[in-house]
Length: 108
Image 1: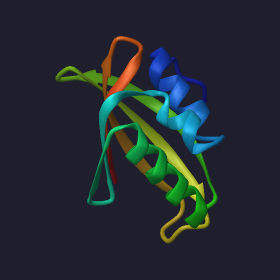
Image 2 (image 1 turned 90 degrees about the horizontal axis):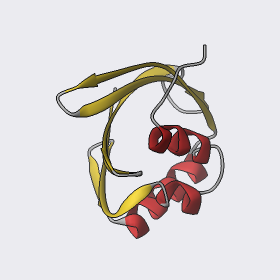
Image 3 (image 1 turned 60 degrees about the horizontal axis):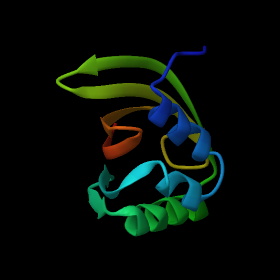
């Protein structure tokens, strides 16, 4: 199913199929990502987070729902891959500043 995502978020999900540097460029310089109990601050840390995740697992991510709530854009996506518990539906809580992502929290 195809959904209409805000441009910075669509760019993030497209970049997620590629390399970690492209993913990091979707974020503001001092952006914050929270995932699996860890917090990553800044583009360099976000690039490393994505590189480490990509080394551990092979996966596909298919967004299927999007809503606005409390100033955040919440995208629900089906993640399928070679990780424990696959497939799983994750919620991505995005905060956008201008044309970039200022924060992302990924919750099961």
